[in-house]
Image (cartoon, rainbow, N blue to C red; front, side, top):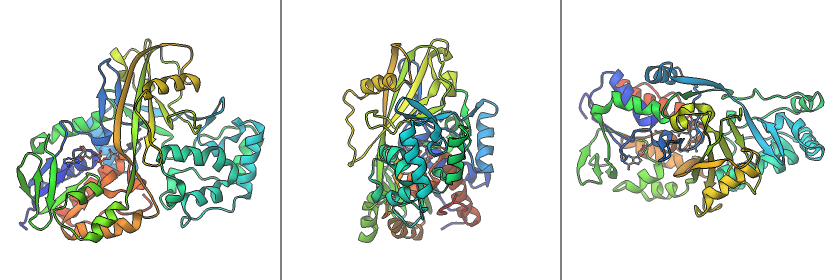
Amino acid sequence: MTDTPRVVIIGAGPCGLGCARELRRLGHVNWLLAEQQDVAGGHAGSVIDPQGFTWDFGGHVVFSHYGEFDTLLEETMGDEVYQHERSSYIRFGNNWVPYPFQNNLRHLPPEPAYECILGLIEAPGGDSSQDFALWMEATFGGGITHHFMRPYNFKVWATPPERMASNWIAERVSVIDYKRALRSLTFQEDDAAWGPNNMFTFPAVGGTAEIYRRLAVKLSDQIQYNREIASVDPERKTVAMADGTEETYDKLVSTMPIDVLVSKLVHCPDSVRRAAEDLEHNGVLVVGIGYESPLKDDKSWMYFPAEDIPFYRATNFAKYSSANVPDADTGRYCSYMTEIAYSRYKPVSKEGLAEHVEESLRRAGVIEGLPEVASMHIEDAAYAYPVPTLKRDAALEVIQPWLMHHDIYSRGRFGSWRYEIGNMDHAVKMGIDTARLIVEKTPEEIWPSNDA
Ligand SMILES: Cc1cc2nc3c(=O)[nH]c(=O)nc-3n(C[C@H](O)[C@H](O)[C@H](O)COP(=O)(O)OP(=O)(O)OC[C@H]3O[C@@H](n4cnc5c(N)ncnc54)[C@H](O)[C@@H]3O)c2cc1C
């Protein structure tokens, strides 16, 4: 290895770009970023459909745990962002229950409200060694688990909760004590301000991808698009590109899914390959419906536990930014971005899906009347959620040390395969930390921490 190690970064998503930007900031010039697509952004990308509606690949909101991410946002977007107060709801029968569900049981009919509060009072309390199914019952009791947690989580993860761990939860699921729920029920008061994302930011133009497009422009002289890594030789320290060319590296930072990376290794122990087979993910079909109807709805996003509604979430995307509809004309258009998770446990067909989603938006009371449909758009995120299964941590403990021993850093949402550090701010920070580790030998701050 030379004094200035050759760093090859795979992927121009938030993590790869965060790493590249930090290498540049540290004055390290010997790097190359290879991205298989012709645009930057990865899962945090956005598209404009032929009718002029902008869609993200799933409902993205920007909220940050890290000063470094705030700086990046300021650098790229300046004041071209909107600050929104979260206004999210759960559809329960014909009612809108403010999020989080368990804090706002007063919006339920008496029977389920009673079941939920009773279950909460009797719940012994969960502990993180339990599987997710047991943890839900122990934490929330039977009522909330039956009416909301279990059906909703199956729709999101498309994975039976018995196969999932609960040690990833921390701030991702609102856990409350029964006194707070009882108070809200008895005094008929809403309690909606929970959580890390009760305020969120969104780019004024271009969808979420705008942040990463702008960042990529600044680094463009060292980013190579349409360059797909086909295989990695950890002994020769080379990556072979799909176009037949080869690059050598001293340090490889990979942000592609770690199971895919392992499948691309020219050689590695069987134990590493077997461990990669234990990792599970879901996919999400993002179905966007644009309406020729003025934006009236004040909700930010809505959750749907009911089985007869295909999506688990619908985002009121025109509210995030008027630029998300044609001519930024929210006096004429509104748009809803919905997400439908799939897996081998929950197969979903694309056939007729957009029509089913559109009909469901009306049936669920999201959109009123019979407005003209101006656009129907589908995106397929085949890797959407890295599922925290019971086998995940043991598998990663086999794979990651072997990779790092060979100077390969697998980071980012699917590179780390850790949902609890799988948001954009985490991904950027992981990229920054990896650059600092390589150049300054500073220990990483969030990977593989469990409690970011
Ligand atoms: C449905 C959904 C909703 C989400 N909501 C939010 C949210 O509200 N807030 C939030 O902060 N985050 C959210 N996220 C997470 C966010 O999208 C990720 O944190 C972020 O995109 C991860 O960045 P990354 O760089 O780790 O990976 P990615 O974005 O996946 O980027 C990896 C890049 O590697 C490239 N690549 C892969 N294989 C190869 C190869 N062989 N050769 C070359 N290049 C390759 C890909 O093309 C891609 O550009 C959401 C994600 C999903 C799926």
